[in-house]
Amino acid sequence: MKKNGSLSVLLKGLLKENPVFVLILGTCPTLATTTNVTGAFGMGIAALAVLVCSNILISLLRKVIPDNVRIPCYIVVIAGFVTIVQMIVQAFLPGLYEMLGVYLPLITVNCIILGRAEMFAGKNNVGKSALDGIGMGLGFTLALVVMATIREVLGNASFAGIEIGFLQNYKIEFLVKAPGGLLVYGCLIALVYVITRGKAPLKKSFSCAGCPNAANCQTGTCEAPAETVAETPAANSEEGGAQ
Amino acid sequence: MDAFKSLLVILLSSVLVNNYVLSRFLGICPFLGVSKKLDQATGMGIAVTAVMLLATAVTWPIQYFLLDKVGLGYMQTIVFILVIASLVQLLELLLKRFIPALHKGLGVYLPLITTNCAVLGVAINNINDGYNFLQSMVSSLGVGLGFLLAMVLFSGLRSRIEESNIPKPFRGLGATLIAASFLSLAFMGFAGIVEKLFA
Image 1 (cartoon, rainbow over the protein chains, first blue to last red):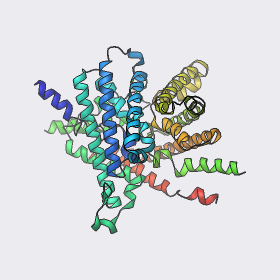
Image 2: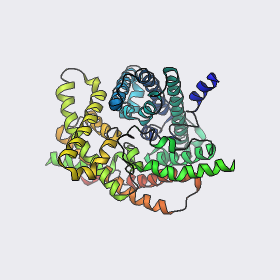
Image 3: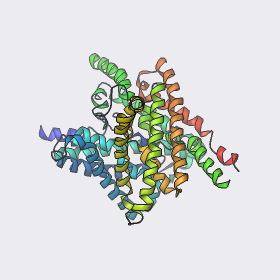
Image 4: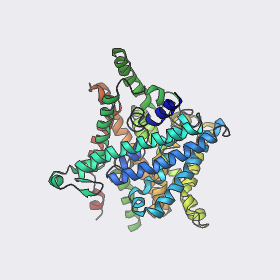
């Protein structure tokens, strides 16, 4: 049972609670770094590293940090790890550093990391938080790589920089540009909804609880959750009822 | 005259060509979250513009007169995010205390901006692009106005989506993202226009 619990903590990030396609967190890097597979993979791993480290530290400190100032504390912890990762990438992978550019420091404000700190690490023990970090990080990486594969193969006729011969004359260049990212993302969200429907957790339970600003947010200001709540749970409960 | 021209180029290109939301994907969360109604979209856009200007006015001197002077350039991310977060909190407190009417209109959006990647993004980008103080301020203004423009346009699109009959899997965020993709496609048409205008 115990093992089962840990395993499900680890695995839920991959599809059922995929941070990108189900929780809809971290949209900015998802769209920006998926023009090629290499950049997407690098971004995923960098975020994974920050996520695991910050989850562990925040979980260790969860009883020390006063509740009122927890968000600033979390941000400092996360920004610290981001700076470390940034320096490591700059030193050992300068090519990747160039490619990711400003999006590397912007991992700091990636909602996935703050969201998991708030949703999970602030409430659970160290082991589980680390597993959650690994699972969510892998889910994020997986989502980025899937999206980048679609965009790079169809848009640029290559995979991780290696050209694919027979597609050279059929590039859909639109896909590697900004609008293509939004289009592919929208379609993938719909696809994941079809795959997981009925089984995916209700967005309601995440929408506001998962938002780092939930405490400050007054009802009706932020409308994405309200809207998804209005749409999805109704649909989900229908599916659930049918099954 | 040349200086003025370069400022105008920075302003126009950050509003139209390099629109942060639609071509650089910064600040997508509030863009998707608060764009459902026109008045809220406008309020959020104005609040973001104000915070961007303020954040740049503070982070630019910090980078050049503090961090670079003492060789702590690598602390940029930590310092900037802390400064921005506390600035936003401070602004909210001040507005609440002294201009309650404005706080009522914009205050609710301020806490949501703390972790907005567009604000941190514009602060870092201004430094990376090597802009001087005036250019940085103009670029922040442009980015903010670009954000406002995208929000207002998109809230119009959103209200149409609400009324239409969309296949189930696409309901909610799927259709919203695809609509954003079309808006972004329209903005791609601006590419090159600024350089041609002032060539």
